[in-house]
Length: 174
Ligand SMILES: NC(=O)c1ccc[n+]([C@@H]2O[C@H](COP(=O)([O-])OP(=O)(O)OC[C@H]3O[C@@H](n4cnc5c(N)ncnc54)[C@H](OP(=O)(O)O)[C@@H]3O)[C@@H](O)[C@H]2O)c1
Image (cartoon, rainbow, N blue to C red; front, side, top):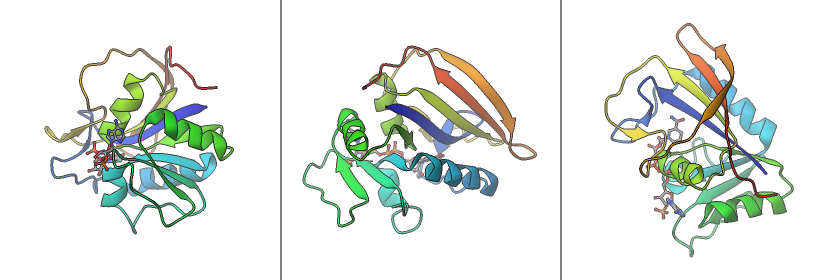
């Protein structure tokens, strides 16, 4: 199973303001993001992000939506939405549903959890021309030391750059 993380960040590595606002993400990036979701067909998202955009962005129709929560009693009313309580379970569910790749789409807590467990294989970061100073970091949950290999740099808009990295030594669940 390949895990691709896709996130919009500020130039100082934040994914949302302190109050959770990430409405500064550009339309150009949102369109690329949407295309990537459809291409991979499976997203993994934290419960906070899922609930924040419930009925607006999520659940995404036509793809598998896997939502991380510590609430093991939470049940979904939709077949396309599955709640899981660990990163490994997220990967197992994706595999059972026939996916070979998943798109990890935040927020910072869930990203940090996957990274610490060595489960992120690739990162696509859309770096927005913005400094937020304080807010939710790309990877929450403490110190990590992960080496990356730059695969590509794309200019998406006038001020927007998309970086694609391979994560070195990511462990895999076959
Ligand atoms: N810029 C971007 O591209 C982007 C993308 C996505 C999100 N965001 C922003 O990120 C913010 C949310 O980030 P966040 O870090 O606060 O939350 P998050 O990562 O979206 O979700 C955190 C939730 O995941 C569940 N969780 C955490 N650790 C877990 C574990 N070990 N096992 C099982 N479940 C676990 C918990 O849900 P329960 O509370 O239910 O237990 C926790 O409250 C939002 O404001 C959103 O706007 C930005």
